[in-house]
Length: 156
Image 1 (cartoon, rainbow, N blue to C red):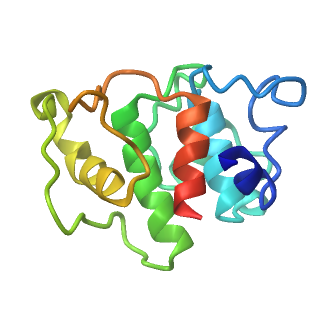
Image 2: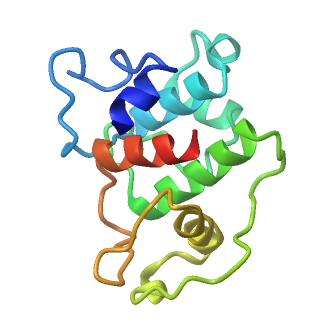
């Protein structure tokens, strides 16, 4: 249901490698896929056409979240939270670099979350974009395609 909700509004097959043949929700999201998804959902593809991934990342204001020098690197859950928070702000006309959670969620592994991403993690947990597993966020674990699609479905 989440996949249909998202793909009914956005074309994703050209963003995720191999998705035209098989969705593979268990595969990790890569940095290059995250950048392409961000620009697609915010309607910014024309603004970044012809740019390298590093140029796109800088132009989109994502250099502090993503590692453009590693396009094939897996997107961690804490970095995904920051990307989702910015996407949420952009889709809702909230502007600015970030939006804050209205309440604090107890996270068993909060100390493992980079301080730069804690606010975004809190927002994503509060809004239900991302979930805890056994009370833990697992910030360094790669975000899967399935998790990303579920987050986007919740956001839309």
